[in-house]
Image 1: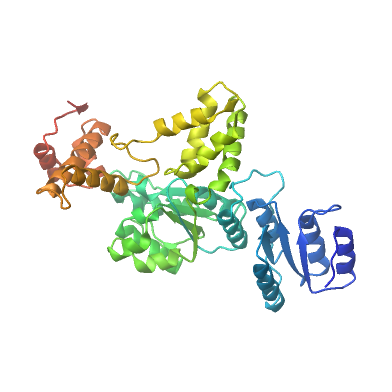
Image 2: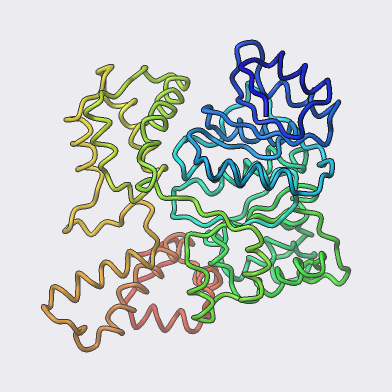
Length: 452
């Protein structure tokens, strides 16, 4: 084994045919280790190179992988892990990897954070850039699932194709199949022309299926066929269409629990869960908060807001917060600080006031930012049960809860449709007569053009 502190000596040894394995840092006095990688791979394509760096960003991991590194290790790393990687590098059969698009130095960082949890995500993403493997991203709301999906697309094989996203929770159940697969003219009432679905729109690129746990069973069956056969048909169509897309799915829900409840197909889960990625909530990587805050403040300044900073005591207070809304909640807070406060340095008193006013109290009845509907309902029910001083719910609670949920749901839908009961019934997935009965039973007053 030979060691050196500069790139020129390393290059001389490699060009003279010495060694079977290179372990290199990125930062060296005469040349970047990343810049040296392509030159080494050009004259020694079978040479295994392990890159280590304290520049622990996603782009560092991606560039190391794209330029031919066998493995990337962020500093500090465990010596046992290094030994394991060396053993794997020397024993793995050698083959030339397919070239992947390059990440340029000036590109904007798609993900922020240098915590161990984020480092592992960077390494996983770097390994996936040159593949078309299906990926399942799990994580709480606000953790950045779409950012990860976009990074996989923007630095992957399909970066020249479209990135198309669809949120299953935001589309009425009866329209999801049409949105995904498209429909032919006359396929159903209102289909006045052919509509290209998201699969067709994403041709040659990436289709991001957000909140996959909210996909209805019928659409799950059709999606499974696409994953199995590589083709689909439009709603009302007969000719199969080949699907040339990479699929990335995401969910904040526990899919294995939905499978046990019969709400999600187990075979579809295994088709989607080829490579699982779990995004940690912000409370599990609080060491990333200072870097995230600086990033969001710089973004706000670039948008024309005054340049701000946060003092050390205030930053420590941010680290102690639970962040139920995760990174999205932190970003919103930082934007609010940049927009509403005149002082250049934000102190702990301001942070304390914002965290108190921005968080729902025990009696506020407000939903926690980033909290799903099911969790919000559960929290309200617990408060309701506790208010009765009983371990068991009060009699008649089922009908009472349904009424409390149905009435505002139907009222808001009718308000959105300006009293059009036919359209409201379609949106709610109800028979028109059923909707009329519920309006009557729930004592909802309706006039054409809106609610009374």
